[in-house]
Image (cartoon, rainbow, N blue to C red; front, side, top):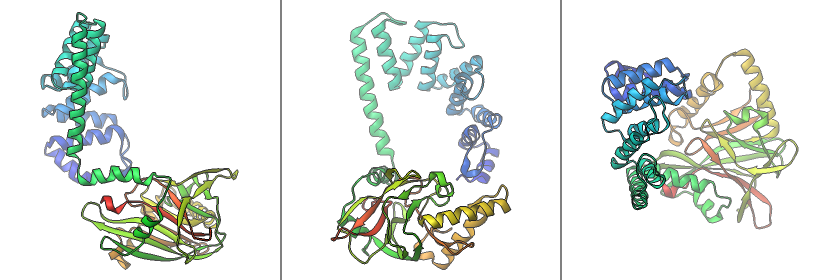
Length: 405
């Protein structure tokens, strides 16, 4: 979420990055700030940034007018902006001018000029332009064929791409690197029992917190994003395997690291006091009872454990609530206050604003255990823990590998 008040204030002062960011926001819209796309505002902010001499703003305006993605193409205007960016040495603009001359977009077709612009972009270090120059030498487009130069420019492109990749990696923060590695970790189909024991044990890096007892009247379980996908019956998959109806503790593993801050790294529904010796994917099934896949998507940064009967009651609650609050937002207008209260009651285990809630449905008292999903939005896998006798003893979601953070 952007601090729009600060952005507008900076833009009023002529701060070029703020003008560019506001152009980006209005071009595509930004749901987190409830901003809808507004092309006129986007162009206005880009033009103000360009008037201040911002190279990237000239490039954006050139793309807007030439691409036809957001408006009918106006090649004359677009080419004009590309020329201004190119005069500042922008290699992308040089390449785009090369493509314009090569195909006759907004200018008279001239393959020789097209080659000259691509060559300038390539000499400026643009790897895609290097590939284009090599191809033009190979095919004799805009220049005499030269196979030796073809090979030379392809090799230069390969070397440049490797350098760019190395630079990109070196510029990543520790958080970005850990986040990327964590994405690979949470997509695994297998889960090591020893690792789970480490996650759900008190160490110098981790601490445990039991949210409380959550009731499952049918033993048919659901894991989902409670503020997004759980609200739509068509998006819900129930677990193919069942547990005995009853109340069970919901346990969270917490981490507070210098890289990621306070996070929930794992959640566990403990359905027996036995220890799991192995884990298997907790596959879900659709209405036709065809087994599909394990895991669930998250779009609102939250996950939950829920009974199928409780979900149906939740849908009735939502139907009634939206009927009484037409145009309302269930999080902003209802759940936000409950999460804030949870934080006030227990601030040591969650971030300000609240990360966990044992929600009781006002209609019938049915319960949903809601908790923040580690690194936020994404796709998370869940697993059944099986004890030494082959019985289900827990349902586990691992959001993060704390060793990465």
